[in-house]
Length: 222
Ligand code: DC
Image (cartoon, rainbow, N blue to C red; front, side, top):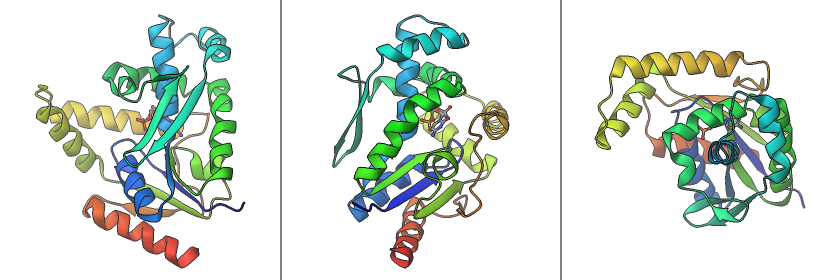
Protein backbone atom coordinates (compact mmCIF):
# COMPACT_ATOMS: atom_id res chain seq x y z
CA UNK A 1 0.00 0.00 0.00
CA UNK A 2 1.25 3.47 -0.87
CA UNK A 3 0.88 5.70 2.15
CA UNK A 4 0.90 9.48 2.45
CA UNK A 5 3.47 10.65 4.96
CA UNK A 6 3.49 14.08 6.55
CA UNK A 7 6.67 14.83 8.51
CA UNK A 8 6.58 17.65 11.06
CA UNK A 9 9.91 18.59 12.60
CA UNK A 10 10.99 21.50 14.71
CA UNK A 11 12.26 22.58 18.12
CA UNK A 12 10.50 22.00 21.44
CA UNK A 13 7.66 24.33 22.24
CA UNK A 14 6.71 24.97 18.61
CA UNK A 15 3.39 23.15 19.04
CA UNK A 16 4.28 20.20 16.78
CA UNK A 17 2.34 17.54 18.64
CA UNK A 18 -0.77 19.71 19.02
CA UNK A 19 -0.80 20.55 15.32
CA UNK A 20 0.09 16.97 14.30
CA UNK A 21 -2.84 15.68 16.34
CA UNK A 22 -5.25 18.20 14.77
CA UNK A 23 -4.03 17.49 11.23
CA UNK A 24 -4.22 13.73 11.79
CA UNK A 25 -7.77 13.97 13.11
CA UNK A 26 -8.86 16.12 10.20
CA UNK A 27 -7.33 13.90 7.51
CA UNK A 28 -8.04 10.57 9.21
CA UNK A 29 -4.32 9.80 9.48
CA UNK A 30 -2.43 8.29 12.42
CA UNK A 31 -0.47 10.73 14.53
CA UNK A 32 2.92 9.34 15.53
CA UNK A 33 4.70 11.36 18.21
CA UNK A 34 8.30 10.11 18.03
CA UNK A 35 9.36 12.19 21.05
CA UNK A 36 7.17 9.83 23.13
CA UNK A 37 9.35 6.90 22.00
CA UNK A 38 12.55 8.61 23.22
CA UNK A 39 10.73 9.51 26.41
CA UNK A 40 9.72 5.85 26.95
CA UNK A 41 13.35 4.76 26.70
CA UNK A 42 14.25 7.62 29.06
CA UNK A 43 11.60 6.38 31.50
CA UNK A 44 12.96 2.82 31.40
CA UNK A 45 16.50 4.09 32.11
CA UNK A 46 15.20 6.30 34.93
CA UNK A 47 13.13 3.57 36.55
CA UNK A 48 16.02 1.09 36.36
CA UNK A 49 18.26 3.65 38.05
CA UNK A 50 20.76 3.73 35.20
CA UNK A 51 22.86 6.78 34.46
CA UNK A 52 21.55 8.37 31.21
CA UNK A 53 25.05 9.73 30.53
CA UNK A 54 26.50 6.21 30.60
CA UNK A 55 26.05 5.21 26.95
CA UNK A 56 27.03 1.57 27.46
CA UNK A 57 24.51 1.22 30.31
CA UNK A 58 21.74 2.74 28.18
CA UNK A 59 22.59 0.55 25.18
CA UNK A 60 22.56 -2.52 27.44
CA UNK A 61 18.93 -1.72 28.34
CA UNK A 62 17.70 -1.84 24.72
CA UNK A 63 17.23 -5.63 24.37
CA UNK A 64 14.90 -5.51 27.37
CA UNK A 65 12.76 -2.72 25.96
CA UNK A 66 9.70 -3.25 23.85
CA UNK A 67 7.65 -0.27 22.71
CA UNK A 68 4.18 -0.48 21.20
CA UNK A 69 1.89 2.23 19.92
CA UNK A 70 -1.87 2.31 20.28
CA UNK A 71 -4.14 4.71 18.45
CA UNK A 72 -7.47 6.18 19.50
CA UNK A 73 -9.54 9.27 18.72
CA UNK A 74 -7.77 10.94 21.62
CA UNK A 75 -4.41 10.39 19.88
CA UNK A 76 -1.48 8.09 20.40
CA UNK A 77 -0.99 5.87 23.48
CA UNK A 78 2.41 4.37 24.13
CA UNK A 79 3.24 1.12 25.90
CA UNK A 80 6.56 0.23 27.46
CA UNK A 81 6.83 -3.54 27.91
CA UNK A 82 3.04 -3.73 27.84
CA UNK A 83 2.40 -0.93 30.35
CA UNK A 84 0.66 2.27 29.24
CA UNK A 85 3.23 4.98 30.03
CA UNK A 86 1.57 7.80 28.04
CA UNK A 87 1.22 9.95 31.16
CA UNK A 88 4.37 8.91 33.06
CA UNK A 89 6.64 10.01 30.20
CA UNK A 90 5.46 13.62 30.56
CA UNK A 91 7.25 14.18 33.90
CA UNK A 92 9.84 16.94 33.76
CA UNK A 93 12.69 14.65 34.81
CA UNK A 94 11.91 12.39 31.84
CA UNK A 95 12.42 15.30 29.40
CA UNK A 96 16.02 15.39 30.53
CA UNK A 97 16.46 11.60 30.30
CA UNK A 98 14.84 11.58 26.84
CA UNK A 99 17.13 14.34 25.65
CA UNK A 100 20.22 12.42 26.83
CA UNK A 101 19.25 9.02 25.44
CA UNK A 102 18.20 10.57 22.11
CA UNK A 103 21.81 11.64 21.46
CA UNK A 104 22.97 7.98 21.44
CA UNK A 105 23.15 6.59 17.86
CA UNK A 106 22.20 3.04 18.96
CA UNK A 107 19.02 4.39 20.56
CA UNK A 108 18.12 6.23 17.35
CA UNK A 109 18.82 3.10 15.28
CA UNK A 110 16.62 1.07 17.66
CA UNK A 111 13.63 3.34 16.96
CA UNK A 112 14.24 3.99 13.25
CA UNK A 113 12.83 0.67 12.03
CA UNK A 114 9.70 1.03 14.10
CA UNK A 115 9.08 4.58 12.86
CA UNK A 116 9.54 3.58 9.20
CA UNK A 117 7.35 0.50 9.60
CA UNK A 118 4.34 2.40 10.93
CA UNK A 119 4.70 4.97 8.11
CA UNK A 120 4.77 2.20 5.51
CA UNK A 121 1.54 0.67 6.82
CA UNK A 122 -0.56 3.79 7.53
CA UNK A 123 -1.02 7.35 6.35
CA UNK A 124 0.77 9.27 9.08
CA UNK A 125 1.50 12.65 10.53
CA UNK A 126 4.81 11.95 12.26
CA UNK A 127 6.38 14.60 14.44
CA UNK A 128 9.91 14.79 15.80
CA UNK A 129 13.27 16.34 15.00
CA UNK A 130 14.66 14.24 12.14
CA UNK A 131 11.59 12.83 10.41
CA UNK A 132 12.02 14.74 7.13
CA UNK A 133 15.81 14.44 7.14
CA UNK A 134 16.55 10.89 8.36
CA UNK A 135 13.48 8.76 9.04
CA UNK A 136 11.30 9.57 6.01
CA UNK A 137 13.59 11.47 3.61
CA UNK A 138 11.07 10.87 0.81
CA UNK A 139 7.97 11.93 2.77
CA UNK A 140 5.23 13.37 0.55
CA UNK A 141 5.01 16.54 2.68
CA UNK A 142 7.61 17.93 5.05
CA UNK A 143 6.97 20.74 7.47
CA UNK A 144 9.50 22.45 9.71
CA UNK A 145 7.47 24.16 12.38
CA UNK A 146 8.99 26.77 14.60
CA UNK A 147 8.31 29.95 16.58
CA UNK A 148 10.50 32.66 18.05
CA UNK A 149 12.33 31.97 21.32
CA UNK A 150 10.31 34.79 22.88
CA UNK A 151 6.98 33.23 21.90
CA UNK A 152 7.97 29.67 22.85
CA UNK A 153 9.26 30.91 26.22
CA UNK A 154 6.00 32.76 26.82
CA UNK A 155 3.94 29.63 26.03
CA UNK A 156 6.07 27.50 28.38
CA UNK A 157 5.89 30.18 31.09
CA UNK A 158 2.09 30.34 30.84
CA UNK A 159 1.85 26.53 30.94
CA UNK A 160 4.04 26.22 34.05
CA UNK A 161 2.50 29.14 35.94
CA UNK A 162 -0.96 27.70 35.20
CA UNK A 163 0.27 24.55 36.99
CA UNK A 164 1.26 26.73 39.96
CA UNK A 165 5.03 26.49 39.40
CA UNK A 166 7.14 29.56 40.23
CA UNK A 167 9.40 30.12 37.22
CA UNK A 168 11.30 33.01 35.67
CA UNK A 169 10.70 34.00 32.06
CA UNK A 170 14.38 34.86 31.63
CA UNK A 171 15.45 31.42 32.87
CA UNK A 172 13.05 29.74 30.45
CA UNK A 173 14.36 31.84 27.55
CA UNK A 174 17.92 30.88 28.42
CA UNK A 175 17.03 27.16 28.64
CA UNK A 176 15.26 27.25 25.27
CA UNK A 177 18.17 29.03 23.58
CA UNK A 178 20.61 26.50 25.04
CA UNK A 179 18.49 23.50 24.05
CA UNK A 180 17.97 24.85 20.51
CA UNK A 181 21.72 25.18 20.12
CA UNK A 182 22.37 21.64 21.41
CA UNK A 183 19.58 20.10 19.32
CA UNK A 184 20.63 21.77 16.10
CA UNK A 185 24.38 21.22 16.55
CA UNK A 186 24.49 17.64 17.82
CA UNK A 187 26.35 15.16 15.63
CA UNK A 188 23.50 12.67 15.49
CA UNK A 189 20.32 13.69 13.63
CA UNK A 190 20.44 17.42 14.40
CA UNK A 191 17.16 19.33 14.37
CA UNK A 192 17.43 21.19 11.06
CA UNK A 193 14.90 21.66 8.24
CA UNK A 194 15.13 19.28 5.27
CA UNK A 195 16.01 21.12 2.04
CA UNK A 196 12.50 20.51 0.71
CA UNK A 197 10.61 21.31 3.94
CA UNK A 198 8.00 24.05 4.13
CA UNK A 199 8.94 26.28 7.06
CA UNK A 200 6.05 27.52 9.18
CA UNK A 201 6.80 30.09 11.86
CA UNK A 202 3.71 30.14 14.06
CA UNK A 203 4.80 32.97 16.40
CA UNK A 204 1.93 35.12 15.13
CA UNK A 205 -0.68 32.61 13.96
CA UNK A 206 -3.03 30.32 15.85
CA UNK A 207 -2.89 26.54 16.09
CA UNK A 208 -6.03 26.46 13.89
CA UNK A 209 -4.37 28.57 11.19
CA UNK A 210 -1.23 26.44 11.36
CA UNK A 211 -3.38 23.28 10.97
CA UNK A 212 -5.23 24.87 8.05
CA UNK A 213 -1.97 25.62 6.21
CA UNK A 214 -0.84 21.99 6.48
CA UNK A 215 -4.25 20.69 5.38
CA UNK A 216 -4.12 22.99 2.33
CA UNK A 217 -0.60 21.83 1.46
CA UNK A 218 -1.85 18.25 1.69
CA UNK A 219 -4.75 19.01 -0.70
CA UNK A 220 -2.27 20.48 -3.18
CA UNK A 221 0.06 17.48 -3.04
CA UNK A 222 -2.18 14.46 -2.67
O1 DC B 1 9.35 16.33 21.49
P1 DC B 1 9.69 15.81 22.88
O2 DC B 1 10.04 16.88 23.87
O3 DC B 1 8.67 14.87 23.42
O4 DC B 1 11.04 14.96 22.65
C1 DC B 1 11.72 14.34 23.72
C2 DC B 1 13.21 14.31 23.41
O5 DC B 1 13.50 13.41 22.34
C3 DC B 1 13.81 15.66 23.03
O6 DC B 1 14.98 15.88 23.81
C4 DC B 1 14.19 15.53 21.59
C5 DC B 1 14.28 14.05 21.35
N1 DC B 1 13.75 13.67 20.03
C6 DC B 1 14.66 13.36 19.04
O7 DC B 1 15.87 13.45 19.27
N2 DC B 1 14.21 12.94 17.83
C7 DC B 1 12.90 12.85 17.58
N3 DC B 1 12.50 12.42 16.37
C8 DC B 1 11.96 13.19 18.57
C9 DC B 1 12.41 13.60 19.80
